[in-house]
Image: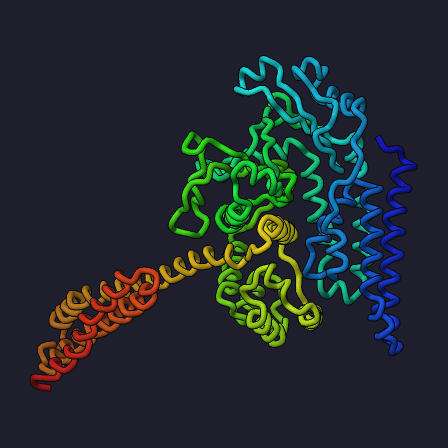
Length: 579
């Protein structure tokens, strides 16, 4: 347990670091430009940002706790941080020494209420992995637990002693820093830092509650129940508490171990493609996703081809034709950091996906506004122009292709695009930090597996499916409208007869030839309207379906001729007779 003196020193050290570099940034980025020295400030910006990132990296590794998590968050914030910072922090992992086993033993036995020798048949004192919030050890379940679970190999996660105090101290320091920055107009007008810190705090506190993580693991497994592409470890609830979590040992080939994958006969390119599909399923289908999909948290598990549990290809990965079944599956672990996408946000993300697939700058900006990134008052003409230029120049390129582009051109466009974005009042919707983190890690992992991996190829099958759904909704809307009008027209003669009966039963004489002819003309006009609506619905539906379903599309277009002929010629024949 950290003593009070250590926690105070930790708190002051974080604040000193933040204050130093906030003042340095304020001097170079605000004060010097006001005195006409912007060139001097710009000249050393890259080296300055790199030094800040390197020193934060060293601070995070030294302090551990939430500081490493902060660095991992910052490394995914490509939207607001310079690339010099994100690049330096991208490799920041839980580079902390393990806790001595005696401390782990004391905490685990206090939580479980029994000695480790009674709780487990074996418990390896050497940690399998050490992280900033806890560490994992291999173990064998006691015979009674093994008989209940059907297996005996397990992994036990034990929280670092005193981590709750450290988390509280770090969150207090982060709230203080966010309060300082929220008084800077330039920062406050663009991002609500206190709100982001609170979102980070909620996620962090959930991450050190292993009962919460165990529930997340079961919910994630339920999301993919029946989907042979994905597996999750089973929770041993009898040996799980808030600070100790016991799971089935599912250790297999690390997802980024190219040599291991190839030795097992697994193509890393296929792994990249399937992994992107699985992550998109979590975002766009389930709305519940793994927010920390770094390589240490995903295994590729070979399974018996054709045997029980053998994957059958993507169940909903966007392509209607499922590929041949690979003899492996993804096994996710570490469910402390999970994210949810509310229905409204998921629909907004789908529109964003359609805009990206269509390379449509205006639609992209509309979708960004719809998701909640931009305030309603934002002037977006320049952003639309920048988006259109982005799609025109770089749309559809993968990372390998982007590496062939002149670095000066990329830098020039990034500077111009960044200036446009910085002028806009943007904000992040709730839970969007986790979405950005998840997608950033997914993209990086897929690119490491396949240098030619193109995120557009992963996005487009989903966009095509969404587009088909959108077209289907349009056709259904036309159909519903046509049926509604047809039903009204079908009931119209009976309603007219009722009106005539009422008129004849009153004092007015209703057998005037003029009234009769007007009634007939009204009936014919209604029928022509119905035919016209049916023609439009069938014809537009055929046009929309022709590319995806050519047989149905042509059939609808041909059938639409019948109501068209009725709408045209019924009017000609209707003019005959006395007036």
